[in-house]
Length: 141
Image (cartoon, rainbow, N blue to C red; front, side, top):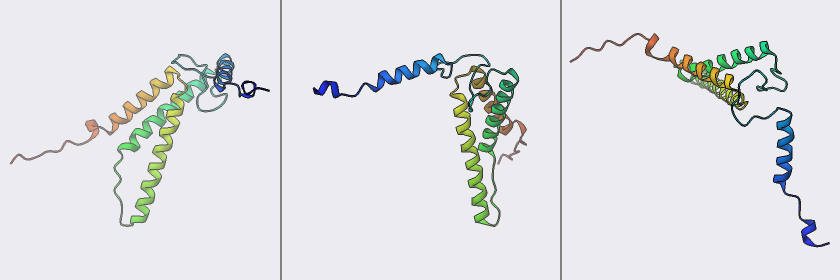
């Protein structure tokens, strides 16, 4: 046998064949698309069911709004530094976990998911903005 026959097959040809079979099954989208026929975060979810798709969009909207609220929540530590550090760590873990879940949902390339994430972040930011805070009255010297 010569060395050329011993060479392994190109992994790119194997990968492209696998990608084509997955695309034909409707599992991978590489561009934005509109519609309820999408997989969001879990296998067979929402599986083309309109009510499950709306519920998934609502949950993603709430998660993105909550993430934005957690980003701007002021935390005032109490007298016990260890407890305050633990609470801050738990809030950070929750915020980062939500951020990763939102990112994975966005990787479905569904236009509806993209819109609810942007709207959720916008509403969360608006709630934390100056619109609901008392204005400071400064005395000019």
